[in-house]
Length: 571
Image (cartoon, rainbow, N blue to C red; front, side, top):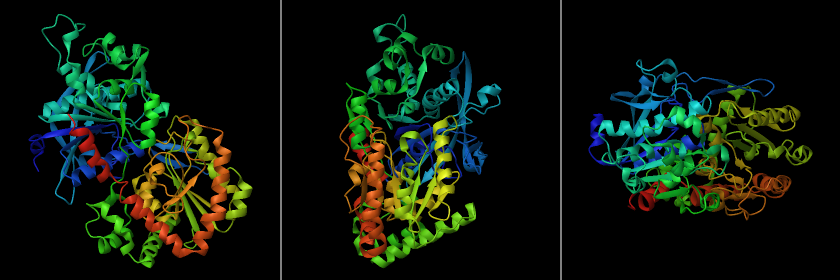
């Protein structure tokens, strides 16, 4: 398909700092990027007129290795962008530290079995005309210091808006997936600038309402680290004032520092959190703003194991493009659901043997826990009372962990080491495995192959979470703190199990750790282990409920239809 055909119709521009489409294109770090990739795939399935914009991240996020002491080490990811994408013939410039930086774009096409195609533009500053330090701006996702991050956000927001215009795209809505792209609103303001005004400070110098009407903002986390802030001396040095005077930027982005979330909030007509609870938390965090809630999802065909795909294709034809049909899961015989799951478990066991040399057994309850390693996620909660864990789990439990910690997060790195310490302490009693370099390929093997999916965040800091949705799609029940999407998907003993008290407060409660751990052990010992070992028919019923009551709804097809009707088409 000739790329210019994408510019013929009006489109929604979907901006995301990271996008995870496949392991061959490592331009993602975790949940935000995977969500973006799944969103784009569902847009292609549903033939929603979308164009996505992101950064090339030529050296990826990082490749993780873990030494024998449990210490994380990071290396660049080497991949060749030209192998997967087409370089487009248009370039633009953006202002960085008083000079122009050239930005080029690469085109990747996301194609659906439905015939839909979504173009994804990967922005890149590795251009011969640029200075060496500028060529590296789009190298590392979330790399470097604040200056590096601000330069990246200039390229994404301002460069992205300019690339779209230069290529001839007709954009009727701009969707910012998190605040990293908020500077696109500054570029849109600049495009409305009234050149007849004597100065920028005149009220009619730009049309703010014209920009607000075209912008949508999705906020993804209550965690402060997820909301980028830049001191104004840095902004003045790196961005300058040619696009917008500093005084006016302060009005939009905060008086003390440039807060990208504040900028996006003030410049968007529709704002949403990513689960019902997260919408509530966000309204408390940002009083005065109308913040909706559209719960995240996953792309079904991407995350179903080959064993489940074959089963769904046989009994629930059309499920991949109409995942709501998964509500018919009871038409699948119990023994075939179990056999498909055991196939996925054997596939995981083989992978573990190849990567770690360790062995897991197919007849032992296997718990999976994999996500970014950060203090609030409490990745080590299951080890809170090691003696009790041994009493209930020796010879009856296998634990598999995975996840990366941000290179600058020393507490997260210490958590990885802590889990490895427990791995050594429990050796010969409870098998504990840590799979290195958690990525799309590892998740594709891990999520369908475990028997139970564990999630233990500090409430209410889990905005949504999508790994549990991927597990549910594969018939793996969730065992999770009631936060994020699980508040909506949880039916106790039916779709899975809760950990700890029901959510009541908006503020994180660190004192809940001991109570949550006690409840985790109680339910493992009294409910989950007996059900798995003594009542296999009832266990399979919970597996089916995870598919028919969770996966049929918590997917990006449902999510995308809500964005279309509630956000994109409401002008």
